[in-house]
Length: 427
Ligand SMILES: [Zn+2]
Image (cartoon, rainbow, N blue to C red):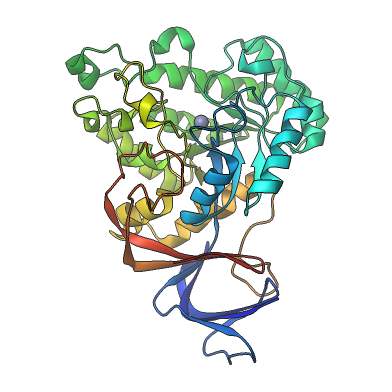
């Protein structure tokens, strides 16, 4: 049981700009936060002058591919990528092979996580068996086994009657259970390669129109509203999608939304000459959508940021643009990329990152919120705003490197990750 003294940091919270303070952790608990604290006897002293001491981040939308696709990622490599990126908890999506659609599968993933991960791993469960959209998954069993949300992520549930039945049934079982929708109308979305627009025209590839996502989103929120279910909209990519959620929130619907760094930062025109690192679903839309999504994040239409970390092997991503799988990695890079593009230029403060990338996702799942406050368990990171990160293949801990940030250098660096009595990362 160690005593750790962090000297000269800037302590971050949801409440406002980081505040100058020292932090003491004893036996995994934060025992003092304040200026010019005495160094306790036998303490390990870390000089963190000018660095941010922040609650650890939480990623509510992660694909770790295990079981079934361990060449792309495992729970072990994925959780190390999370730590590398300052993330101290994640929720996994259920599109593994086989899918997480029964209590047995939930328990299997929990056992692997217990054995292989140094951070807490939570999992979602499928809405329908095998994510095929035909019959309900074993929702009650999965609930007892501990799933924190229900989703067929990767696909939308196409049958509205089945989705409405699932919502009515699950909400009746347990008020805490909620749904997360990947919104897409299959008949509209075509080969799911890229956004329908000027870039798809130029490249000569059939595009997926934003209305495929927006119509499904409006429908799913309306269905949830009709039965009083709580619904979370995943990876929103368009301005009209964001405004749809805003409107439903004003109508009193129990709906939240999330946005991913890639939808804030990149647009279809970045695809260039068929760069598959920019291929994901929902696809990158336009610069105007980027701007609207950032505003939605600042306004609180989106309560949270998630990565939709979706690793694929280089072999798969080397296929032609239409056949290459959808997805981009994010665990290693998300926090630094958000700092570099938004916090450093003054677009929003670190407090917004704490709120949307740490506190709100945990609240949504009814988990304890990480705070750098006396009496709380240590769940924090040390971030150097003057440092840099170069995202080489060696630096990133994910098994896959399908990200446009590969070999790029960005401002900001995660220097330490502390969870309880353990230092998980010390660069
Ligand atoms: Zn996903």
